[in-house]
Length: 353
Image (tube, rainbow, N blue to C red; front, side, top):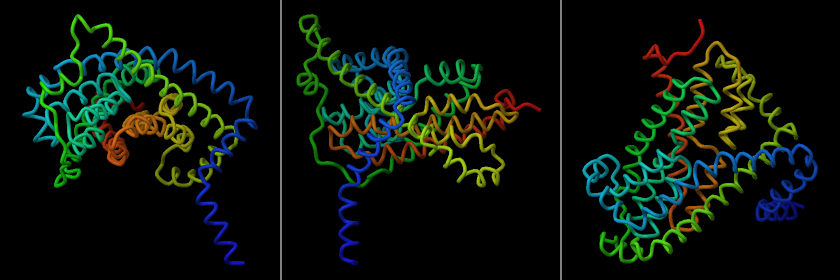
């Protein structure tokens, strides 16, 4: 009997992924009515928000990879990047583009750096930990202006998000510090020859390659947006989010935080846009709690972004661990910085008396 029991457990461990996929498929059928609406909303979100904001940046970064600007930036900023983040100056390109354009540009550039041998494996993993960030267009525009209806809240969240990113980068300068991959790093001249530098003669070919690569990336992101819209809908329809709320309610009461936040936080762990939108709509005299929770979710990014990054890094030899650890740390530090800013600077305190 015990042998059969052990055999069943072993079989279960081997096939748990198949069981998860099977349960997901059954849930799609069972909750098809609510799920259909969620999928439509996910497609609409991707088409109206994600594509217009990210696709031009994808094409732009691909085009820039065919120039020597990365090495020019590297030469200028190496004096800062190496002592602060233990990454060569070229890594500044990933950080700058990542903070300007938002998820998942930073991860895409860091992975491209590894594929093209611009940086070592360890340097690219350090870049992964802090260069994949939420952009100002989303934080100030979508979160601050549209969701909270207050530009200053968006500014506060962007400042703390940026500072937390730099803090995580400094902490991860010690990631595999004593381990160096023995691989050839291309010089500027070697890399440009290999990469086919953009000229007037091959501009059409370079542009075409950049657009095709960008379309592939944006379609993958669209798939994740729709998938997680469906997952969130299933979690709500099945009552699982309500169950989580019941379990965590005593803890939230103990720390004197409104249990109404539980469901949107849970949702935000999967997909930050829906989660943050719900959090911003919770009426509270202590608006600072809403803002601090939002800061954490913006830093963490959610499992949807995590899997987007994994889909990008899986095509290289980079580990996803520094990214996961870095985003958890980013979320925590962002929340702490936001709390400090709210309490130190009166113009960032939006609590009602």
